Length: 239
Image (tube, rainbow, N blue to C red; front, top):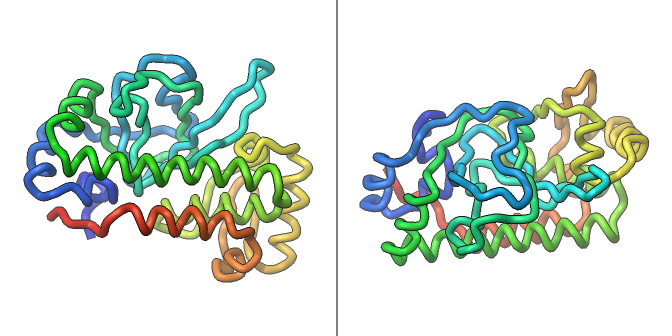
């Protein structure tokens, strides 16, 4: 297994062809991503893309009144800042570190140059972007049509897929902000899952006790998103 300071701890970087990875290593900068750190704000020009390895980053849409809702989550499977290589430079969402940890960043100039010079890099990043768009679309459907406890199950499973363990440090207030629902709704949903023996929740720590049970309890949205990531992103190829 690659170490946490190795770029191949990020699955997208690990999927780069060996010769591309050898060139990228000179430009990738290790970073410590702190809980609550804002990587970019809505409408701001982005200076870097970020490849989390042990951290998780939430992409949030924030309304004029200050309310927020998560539209996607990015962890060791992907990259934060797709607007840079898609040509948009800015985006109307905010990127906030949801779970602190390690990662790597690459300057805007470097990612643009690599995207333009290498067909394998371009195709890999475009496939990832398609998977991310699927997650965003499915999140919108889920938030509109499914129950809060189903949404919570989906959110927990997506987060677990991007962590090494089975425990999340997350307050109910923060979960409510991510899902765009009232805190009371999250409290009720978490109690349902706890009574069913699927999770334990104490003082901001959520521990998953029965992952298969969570998968059975959630809606189809989690499986749709996971299948699209599995279909579009290759196995690790770098060494």
